[in-house]
Image 1 (cartoon, helix red, strand yellow):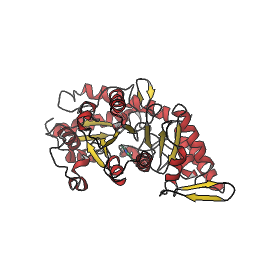
Image 2 (cartoon, helix red, strand yellow):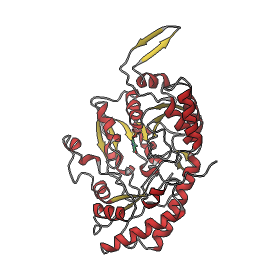
Image 3 (tube, rainbow, N blue to C red):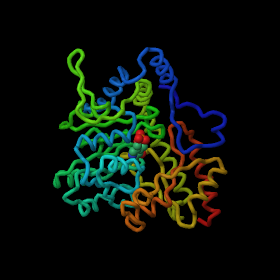
Image 4 (spheres, protein in one colour):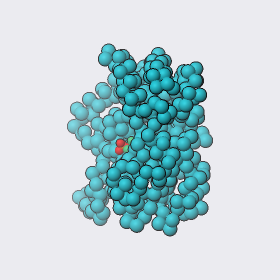
Length: 386
Ligand SMILES: *Cc1c(COP(=O)(O)O)cnc(C)c1O
């Protein structure tokens, strides 16, 4: 295994909140695919799907060109549409709720548990109506949502589950890999995720789902038979993954455990540095400490009210430190306000969403980078009297 790629000269000065690690073997592999005469969906897509299936304990997996379309297709496979409701969290990337609207159904938000920042599963049951079809939990920052309680509710109330595991490749729940058990699970290979195919995603299918149906939704509804036969019996899209992308994704999958180990080390270093600075006692909320469960997709703090996020971000940037916002609460976007959602609906998601800050965390970071972030954050917070 080669070492994580070294940052170039410019990035020694500026530390972004994330950066993909693409090794030379992957780059050479991509060149081979480009020279092979077959660059779109083909043998590498199949190989990537097989490797993903092995990674997820032998379950059936299909690859797509985004983590968004994987979720949309899962909902279509479940027949979710007009008049149906899908229960989800307001604190996620907007794709989580957009796919529900895309299939004509209604997202029903349930507030988060402010400690985990994930869907508060204890509140789910009260949100179930006769129209509820699917529970759509998100494993925010890679920390698994409370899956035992969630699957128990789903089984008892006759609901399906689609896990938005976009951020959770390699996360575990009670020692089992997220995606290796349960109902539908959707992953993303966007460049910011722990493994990337540039753009891409995959859907882990439960046993009662037809992979052929996933394939038809993936490519224009086309079904081929015989030597020259073709039929179309549903409206499919254009969601296939190119072999160039699949080659990148396959190369990343070979290293995702190594990447995640490095992320866990860096997260532990953050806790050590922040404990030494007593950030918790100064009103900064640290993420939950459950390194055995999370793949540490992100390390996110919640700022105290005295330290306005935009100003903290600007001052960190001036000190060469990148940061990010993941995420503003979905229900307050204008599209969702038009559906009737309003400020005050989900107070925990609103408070956390207004003050959450993603700090740099990616496998190519050097040990000293954590201290750099800690010192900069400490100095900036002091400027605000924190
Ligand atoms: C990245 C992400 C998605 C969407 O994945 P894309 O590959 O960008 O389409 C969906 N949900 C969550 C929580 C994500 O982080």
